Length: 258
Image (cartoon, rainbow, N blue to C red; front, side, top):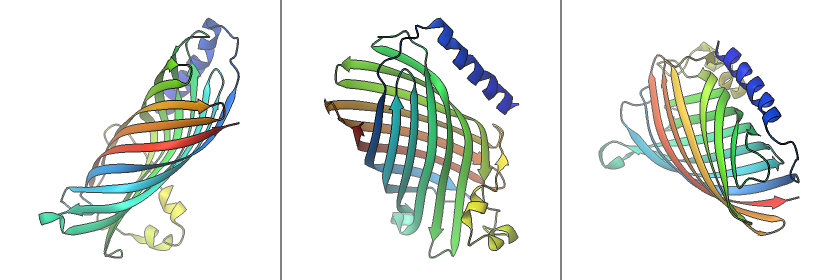
Protein backbone atom coordinates (compact mmCIF):
# COMPACT_ATOMS: atom_id res chain seq x y z
CA UNK A 1 0.00 0.00 0.00
CA UNK A 2 2.85 2.39 0.86
CA UNK A 3 4.53 1.78 -2.51
CA UNK A 4 1.24 2.46 -4.37
CA UNK A 5 0.76 5.74 -2.51
CA UNK A 6 4.31 6.78 -3.35
CA UNK A 7 3.77 5.91 -7.06
CA UNK A 8 0.58 8.00 -7.21
CA UNK A 9 2.40 10.83 -5.46
CA UNK A 10 5.18 10.83 -8.06
CA UNK A 11 2.62 10.88 -10.89
CA UNK A 12 1.00 13.88 -9.23
CA UNK A 13 4.18 15.91 -8.94
CA UNK A 14 5.11 15.18 -12.55
CA UNK A 15 1.74 16.46 -13.77
CA UNK A 16 1.98 19.68 -11.77
CA UNK A 17 4.41 21.04 -14.35
CA UNK A 18 1.37 21.70 -16.57
CA UNK A 19 0.39 24.51 -14.20
CA UNK A 20 3.77 26.25 -14.31
CA UNK A 21 5.60 28.09 -17.04
CA UNK A 22 7.95 25.82 -18.95
CA UNK A 23 10.88 28.13 -19.72
CA UNK A 24 13.90 26.41 -18.19
CA UNK A 25 16.70 28.28 -16.41
CA UNK A 26 20.32 27.48 -17.37
CA UNK A 27 21.38 24.11 -15.99
CA UNK A 28 24.16 23.95 -13.42
CA UNK A 29 26.16 20.89 -12.35
CA UNK A 30 28.12 20.72 -9.09
CA UNK A 31 30.64 18.26 -7.66
CA UNK A 32 31.71 18.75 -4.05
CA UNK A 33 33.51 17.48 -0.96
CA UNK A 34 32.52 18.12 2.63
CA UNK A 35 33.48 17.46 6.24
CA UNK A 36 31.38 17.67 9.38
CA UNK A 37 30.62 16.60 12.92
CA UNK A 38 27.71 14.44 14.09
CA UNK A 39 26.53 14.73 17.71
CA UNK A 40 24.64 11.53 18.49
CA UNK A 41 22.48 10.30 21.34
CA UNK A 42 21.06 6.80 21.13
CA UNK A 43 19.74 3.80 22.99
CA UNK A 44 19.97 0.32 21.49
CA UNK A 45 18.65 -2.28 23.91
CA UNK A 46 20.18 -5.02 21.77
CA UNK A 47 23.63 -3.69 22.73
CA UNK A 48 23.08 -2.08 26.15
CA UNK A 49 20.27 -0.81 28.38
CA UNK A 50 22.27 2.40 28.91
CA UNK A 51 21.80 5.62 26.99
CA UNK A 52 24.86 6.46 24.92
CA UNK A 53 26.22 9.66 23.44
CA UNK A 54 29.04 10.24 21.01
CA UNK A 55 30.69 12.49 18.45
CA UNK A 56 31.62 11.31 14.97
CA UNK A 57 33.70 13.05 12.33
CA UNK A 58 32.24 12.41 8.89
CA UNK A 59 33.09 13.08 5.26
CA UNK A 60 30.80 13.48 2.26
CA UNK A 61 30.83 13.53 -1.55
CA UNK A 62 28.12 15.47 -3.37
CA UNK A 63 26.88 15.62 -6.94
CA UNK A 64 24.04 17.96 -7.91
CA UNK A 65 22.36 18.97 -11.16
CA UNK A 66 20.16 22.08 -11.03
CA UNK A 67 17.89 23.25 -13.83
CA UNK A 68 14.26 23.97 -13.08
CA UNK A 69 14.29 20.81 -10.96
CA UNK A 70 17.07 19.34 -8.81
CA UNK A 71 18.85 15.97 -8.91
CA UNK A 72 21.22 15.09 -6.05
CA UNK A 73 23.56 12.25 -5.06
CA UNK A 74 25.12 12.25 -1.58
CA UNK A 75 27.57 9.81 0.06
CA UNK A 76 28.55 10.11 3.74
CA UNK A 77 30.86 8.13 6.02
CA UNK A 78 31.90 8.78 9.61
CA UNK A 79 33.08 7.09 12.81
CA UNK A 80 33.48 7.93 16.46
CA UNK A 81 33.18 6.74 20.07
CA UNK A 82 29.97 6.30 22.07
CA UNK A 83 30.25 6.74 25.84
CA UNK A 84 27.95 5.55 28.62
CA UNK A 85 27.87 4.38 32.20
CA UNK A 86 29.24 6.01 35.30
CA UNK A 87 31.52 8.92 34.34
CA UNK A 88 31.23 7.74 30.70
CA UNK A 89 33.80 4.99 31.25
CA UNK A 90 32.12 2.49 28.91
CA UNK A 91 33.15 3.17 25.32
CA UNK A 92 31.79 1.70 22.08
CA UNK A 93 33.14 2.31 18.59
CA UNK A 94 30.53 3.24 16.01
CA UNK A 95 30.50 3.69 12.26
CA UNK A 96 27.92 5.52 10.12
CA UNK A 97 27.42 5.56 6.36
CA UNK A 98 24.77 6.51 3.83
CA UNK A 99 24.21 6.67 0.07
CA UNK A 100 21.26 8.65 -1.28
CA UNK A 101 19.72 9.89 -4.53
CA UNK A 102 17.12 12.70 -4.49
CA UNK A 103 14.88 14.23 -7.15
CA UNK A 104 13.00 17.46 -6.39
CA UNK A 105 10.27 18.85 -8.68
CA UNK A 106 9.86 22.64 -8.73
CA UNK A 107 6.24 23.68 -8.17
CA UNK A 108 6.87 27.43 -8.42
CA UNK A 109 6.64 29.73 -11.44
CA UNK A 110 9.82 30.69 -13.28
CA UNK A 111 12.05 33.57 -12.20
CA UNK A 112 10.87 33.34 -8.60
CA UNK A 113 13.22 34.11 -5.72
CA UNK A 114 11.24 31.65 -3.58
CA UNK A 115 10.88 28.10 -4.89
CA UNK A 116 8.88 25.20 -3.49
CA UNK A 117 9.87 21.63 -4.35
CA UNK A 118 8.40 18.22 -3.73
CA UNK A 119 9.95 14.87 -4.58
CA UNK A 120 11.53 11.72 -3.25
CA UNK A 121 14.75 10.12 -2.04
CA UNK A 122 16.07 6.58 -2.26
CA UNK A 123 18.60 6.08 0.52
CA UNK A 124 20.68 3.38 2.20
CA UNK A 125 21.54 4.23 5.83
CA UNK A 126 23.82 2.12 8.08
CA UNK A 127 24.91 2.38 11.72
CA UNK A 128 27.22 -0.27 13.22
CA UNK A 129 28.38 -0.44 16.86
CA UNK A 130 31.23 -2.59 18.15
CA UNK A 131 32.20 -3.03 21.80
CA UNK A 132 35.61 -4.49 22.66
CA UNK A 133 36.46 -6.18 19.35
CA UNK A 134 32.96 -7.65 18.79
CA UNK A 135 32.46 -9.02 22.29
CA UNK A 136 29.18 -7.21 21.76
CA UNK A 137 27.85 -5.52 18.64
CA UNK A 138 24.69 -4.20 17.08
CA UNK A 139 23.56 -2.47 13.92
CA UNK A 140 20.63 -0.88 12.15
CA UNK A 141 20.34 -0.69 8.38
CA UNK A 142 17.50 0.85 6.37
CA UNK A 143 16.99 1.37 2.66
CA UNK A 144 13.99 2.59 0.73
CA UNK A 145 11.92 5.56 -0.39
CA UNK A 146 11.18 8.83 1.41
CA UNK A 147 8.96 11.79 0.56
CA UNK A 148 10.68 15.19 0.48
CA UNK A 149 9.30 18.73 0.74
CA UNK A 150 11.67 21.64 0.23
CA UNK A 151 11.70 25.42 -0.01
CA UNK A 152 14.53 27.71 -1.15
CA UNK A 153 14.98 31.47 -0.87
CA UNK A 154 17.39 33.46 -3.02
CA UNK A 155 18.75 36.10 -0.63
CA UNK A 156 21.02 37.89 -3.13
CA UNK A 157 22.48 37.02 -6.52
CA UNK A 158 25.12 34.83 -4.84
CA UNK A 159 23.41 33.70 -1.60
CA UNK A 160 20.68 31.09 -1.15
CA UNK A 161 19.05 29.26 1.78
CA UNK A 162 17.23 25.95 1.37
CA UNK A 163 15.31 23.80 3.87
CA UNK A 164 14.10 20.22 3.32
CA UNK A 165 12.04 17.75 5.36
CA UNK A 166 12.25 14.05 4.49
CA UNK A 167 9.92 11.32 5.83
CA UNK A 168 10.32 7.59 4.99
CA UNK A 169 7.26 5.92 3.42
CA UNK A 170 8.59 2.51 2.30
CA UNK A 171 11.65 1.22 4.15
CA UNK A 172 13.35 -2.13 4.56
CA UNK A 173 14.84 -2.57 8.04
CA UNK A 174 17.66 -4.92 9.02
CA UNK A 175 18.47 -5.54 12.70
CA UNK A 176 20.35 -8.31 14.55
CA UNK A 177 18.47 -10.83 16.71
CA UNK A 178 18.32 -10.30 20.47
CA UNK A 179 21.52 -12.22 21.21
CA UNK A 180 23.38 -10.31 18.50
CA UNK A 181 24.13 -13.23 16.19
CA UNK A 182 22.41 -16.08 14.37
CA UNK A 183 23.18 -18.61 11.66
CA UNK A 184 22.53 -16.15 8.82
CA UNK A 185 25.02 -13.65 10.27
CA UNK A 186 27.60 -16.41 10.75
CA UNK A 187 27.18 -17.60 7.16
CA UNK A 188 27.47 -14.08 5.73
CA UNK A 189 30.00 -12.49 8.09
CA UNK A 190 32.47 -12.15 5.19
CA UNK A 191 29.80 -10.66 2.92
CA UNK A 192 28.15 -7.84 4.92
CA UNK A 193 26.16 -6.61 1.89
CA UNK A 194 23.91 -9.67 2.26
CA UNK A 195 23.29 -8.82 5.93
CA UNK A 196 22.61 -5.15 5.18
CA UNK A 197 19.98 -5.95 2.55
CA UNK A 198 18.42 -8.82 4.50
CA UNK A 199 15.67 -6.56 5.79
CA UNK A 200 11.90 -6.60 6.06
CA UNK A 201 9.44 -4.00 4.84
CA UNK A 202 8.48 -1.90 7.85
CA UNK A 203 5.29 -0.32 9.11
CA UNK A 204 4.86 2.79 11.26
CA UNK A 205 4.66 0.46 14.26
CA UNK A 206 8.15 -0.90 13.67
CA UNK A 207 10.03 2.07 12.19
CA UNK A 208 9.67 5.85 12.29
CA UNK A 209 12.10 8.52 11.16
CA UNK A 210 12.29 12.16 10.10
CA UNK A 211 15.16 14.24 8.75
CA UNK A 212 15.31 18.04 8.54
CA UNK A 213 18.06 19.85 6.65
CA UNK A 214 18.76 23.55 6.27
CA UNK A 215 21.71 24.84 4.28
CA UNK A 216 23.23 28.19 3.39
CA UNK A 217 25.00 28.59 0.03
CA UNK A 218 27.43 31.34 -0.90
CA UNK A 219 28.86 31.59 -4.42
CA UNK A 220 32.03 33.75 -4.39
CA UNK A 221 32.75 33.09 -8.09
CA UNK A 222 31.14 31.60 -11.19
CA UNK A 223 32.62 28.15 -10.53
CA UNK A 224 32.71 27.92 -6.73
CA UNK A 225 29.98 27.36 -4.16
CA UNK A 226 30.51 27.24 -0.38
CA UNK A 227 27.85 25.51 1.72
CA UNK A 228 27.03 25.20 5.42
CA UNK A 229 24.58 22.41 6.40
CA UNK A 230 22.67 21.56 9.56
CA UNK A 231 20.77 18.24 9.81
CA UNK A 232 18.47 16.93 12.52
CA UNK A 233 17.66 13.22 12.29
CA UNK A 234 15.35 11.23 14.59
CA UNK A 235 14.91 7.45 14.36
CA UNK A 236 12.92 4.87 16.27
CA UNK A 237 12.77 1.14 15.51
CA UNK A 238 11.02 -1.57 17.50
CA UNK A 239 11.50 -5.22 16.55
CA UNK A 240 12.68 -7.80 19.09
CA UNK A 241 14.73 -5.01 20.66
CA UNK A 242 14.23 -1.25 20.60
CA UNK A 243 16.43 1.39 18.98
CA UNK A 244 16.13 5.17 19.39
CA UNK A 245 18.49 7.88 18.17
CA UNK A 246 18.77 11.64 17.79
CA UNK A 247 21.55 13.13 15.68
CA UNK A 248 22.61 16.73 15.13
CA UNK A 249 24.98 17.14 12.18
CA UNK A 250 26.89 20.24 11.12
CA UNK A 251 29.03 20.21 7.98
CA UNK A 252 30.73 22.50 5.51
CA UNK A 253 31.29 21.72 1.83
CA UNK A 254 32.99 23.20 -1.19
CA UNK A 255 31.40 22.56 -4.59
CA UNK A 256 32.81 23.18 -8.05
CA UNK A 257 30.34 24.25 -10.76
CA UNK A 258 30.98 22.88 -14.25
